[in-house]
Length: 460
Image 1 (cartoon, one colour):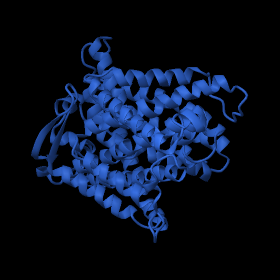
Image 2 (tube, rainbow, N blue to C red):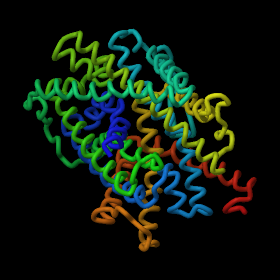
Image 3 (cartoon, helix red, strand yellow):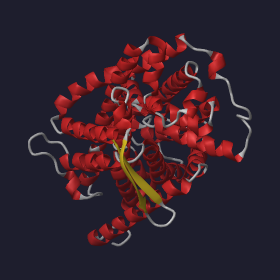
Image 4 (cartoon, rainbow, N blue to C red):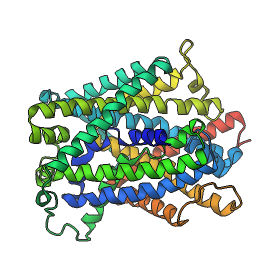
């Protein structure tokens, strides 16, 4: 089980906490933003118990793709729900990849500040109130090159990739441990907990800020369910999957909270919020280490975090590219995604598609990428899975359940309520929701057209 927990934790940590600290502090304007981390952990644990019961009751690889088919009926509604999951993955997986590429590129400005200069910008007027924009800076092209390099390295035999992953992930935990040690040994409580006036006043702006902070923390916690996608490779999944999910959430939640509080105990939050969008906010952890140990530490931290970011991008591309491939083999997604490389036997069409779409998303800002990613996944994946779980529980009480959700149905209700709060309790939430609804509508049209051509449910 220790191996499963380690793999889950590495997938959870990635580059997220290194690039989102300024964003979460700016969302609420002070250290009260730590509420976002705490409530994000509560939602992650509550949703994790949904995954734990499903993973134990339905052992096997596939995760949500498998669960939605079982929960809603493989030959009827479940087929459509599974298709929609893969459909959103074609967009949400590249958004995850792009977030890591952009994070790496922003840290590169520590060495090359000139990369932050805007080269061009133009808005994309789309459908009335829905709008977007493309902003190209020097580090945008660093992000694009990062994506291309990750695709190039993943475009080879899996045995070579496994050796490469071992070297990449060693640095992830080293970087986290060093940041926490530096923060704890130089911590100043009066700096960390200097709350602004009315920090906890339950006003409309407080809840809007809390929703934005929770959106970011949910992005950082995601990955606790990754063990469910590898069910066929897990020994004794009925016990290992629930324990892995619960332990990894507890450990990563502790790491995140300690690391964030440590950083704002050295760098005043007022400085971080005031400087949001500044050069230093792009490489906050590097500035943090430089302030404690000097320029050499800032440079070393930058290298470690850029390495961590690349490892995250590489791992995401490698893992996600196998999901549309598996669905295509099942006959529940476009057959072209089932093609494999003639010599090295990997799903090259799936890999190249996700890499190309991720490259395009590198032109968006980090805030836009994270918001779009979280909203799309919550709306199309997480809510449908939680609702399906509650329906399945009530309709099939006799089904074998090696692990039963604690305090059922409270955790499922908490996670569902938390996801809905994050969707709607933010400024300008309608923009991301609008894009997610359009994506869902197009996916439904594609599914029904495909069902019509194949004479499948509900046409056949």
